[in-house]
Amino acid sequence: MGAVAKDLELYRSDEPPPGWTLDTEVDGVLRGADARGWQTFHLLGYSGGGSVALAFAAQHPERLQSLAVLEPAWAGTWDWSRSYTEHRRLYEELEGLPPEEFMAGFMRLQVRPDVVLPPAEPGAPPPWMARRPAGILAFLRTFKDYHLDRARLAAFSRPVYYAVGGLSHPDDQGDVAARLARVFFPDFHLEVFPRRHHFDPPHRIEPGRLAESLHRHWDLAEGRPAGHHEAMPSRAS
Image (tube, rainbow, N blue to C red):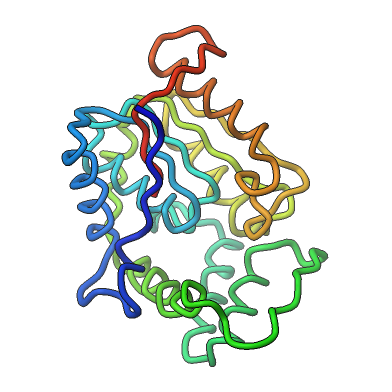
């Protein structure tokens, strides 16, 4: 079986589901895996999906052969540095802004100050983009009080791959990557893509390099020589 891409439960409709949290997404991944008969599988998540993947690993570690996260939006409420704490406070200041200002501020907080972001496209945003401000706000709100179980996450023993862009904000992704590498995961591999950032990510711009890294990660997790490159059960959120 090959990879299956899964959109977030958050975006199934125009508005976030009532009572939505990361657990809603964890349950969605679990249902999808069960429907395909996957007892174990590889899980990959980007941005908000990366936070979902971490939550899944904490709750259902026995289901995962490996974990891969690409710039997860959040990774728990413990061991924050002073700079990261201040950076998260800036996200809270975005709440209540009009959608256009909210998205511009949100994007700016995730890249280095010298990164030039493309201007917004003229006209009304496409339907998928129109849902993003409400969805991002839902993520920011659940991050405030969601309990990502530190002890269970620390006990996750399967291989973990973390990709980060060198142009992403160091007080954001740099802090999260360093914290997870320092505190957790006995089998942790961090890969930096120097010219990439959160809105210019490797899976869009350097898919070949990322695919090679992921294949190597999955091969080693399954005990095969690196470069074996067979299709395997995996899931993206």
